[in-house]
Image 1: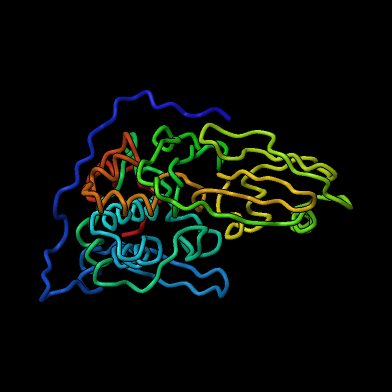
Image 2: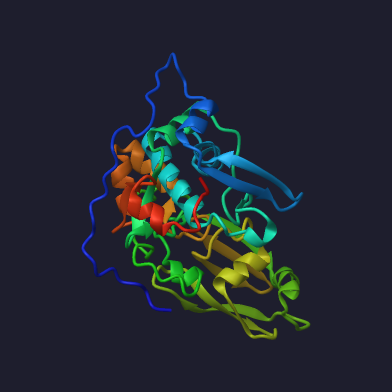
Length: 317
């Protein structure tokens, strides 16, 4: 696949210092405050494993997902930046699970909520109603745990996801990252690939067939199996996404053993959660962080008339 090149001049992101109710140490934000700030906007949330469906006020949902997805104890600027991304994702994907009887799920397929904290409630309140906009409509956005120093182009992970603001860029806050390592035998790899449809009595060797512009593995050659190759992302899913932490890896083989060394965790597209926290710690603002990970997008409010008319599948009022 070809790397997307951004040709448009970057637009300036603007996020007011406070867009929600003011709070103090004596008056910490509560979920009642978030319910009020949601102004009737609701998220229909489903649990696929049990079929449970609940309706949650939008800003309460945002605060809970900040707890579930942001780096623990991240500075306020990082939590507020990811709150904007979380809210935008919820708006764009509000009917993602319509056939299942709800809007979004509570797994990593969508976004993972956890019990809100005072800090995550404040992040939601400080950015209440704010979303990212692309060409006049809520922007499809993604974020990942740790890009490892180089983000990924969206179309490399999801073919057809051609978004000029979701391209591979360097993230300069990962210089001290410790690479992850993993050792597997060729037989362990073969057995893991069988449920993915691969056949063959013996995996003789694996080799990198190609890498994409971000340096991640695009395709692996599988000597001895049929089919004889597999995409990097598919390989990661087959072995296990918490085992092979990303496709930004290399490996060396020693007879039947394969030793992997990699960087990052997750698909690497969009905002880097670890990177956002590090940027905030070195003094970057919410606007700086959003510009870094979503170049070319603008921040606007859900109350904007143009947004209301474009978000036809959005969170219901």
